[in-house]
Image (tube, rainbow, N blue to C red; front, side, top):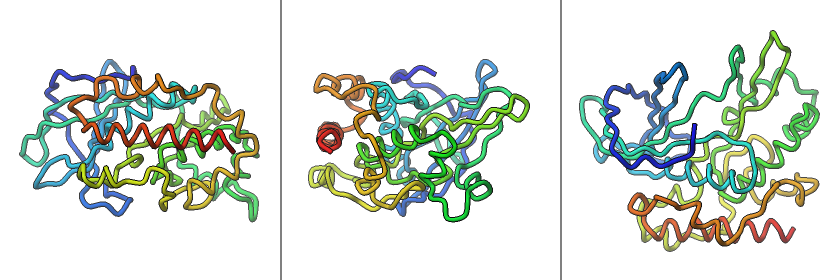
Length: 270
């Protein structure tokens, strides 16, 4: 799927939405749906949804910003579309922005959460990081840790890292990085809160690999200079926020860029 913003309103009222409780402690729910287009399964998700006020979060916008960031840095990841759409939930119609992505599994591949795979296959006392390294996923883990620090990802639990297996071909791999919505200023529900947000504060996060500190987890990376194939430049701001005017407020874009650029500078200084 190509990374893009679809501004023309799409009628997606045919989608059926299931409720997924927020694991971040925020109010409301995150809703997901799926369809098959051209023989490919497509997954849809909404930002934080309130049954009285509709979509009240901006997690879907975060997804496409991170998508673009990882493209810039040369990190393998799942691509998203940000779509302007009309949807129907429990008989009520809403106009909103949602994101869509294609199934990342190849034909005949099955998937399991990394935490489940670790539980079955880890050595006694083996850390989550060492387990990844032993299985040949050390570079993946390093990139994920560094990315989650840059975007302050609050929700990298063990089910947000997936193991893909093809029993017939005897192959096993980790899925490309995905699900970055609970990042950046996801806890800010107003421009006033966004203005006060400290982009360098080390907030408590769910991390399957390492501790609950994205900052502390950087110490796990053995060679920080080799994690990102490419660098972040000041000109990349335009790429990150292309076509997002009017979708999120300027203060959010300003703060997100401040977070990414300042955290990248700090990372490079280590």
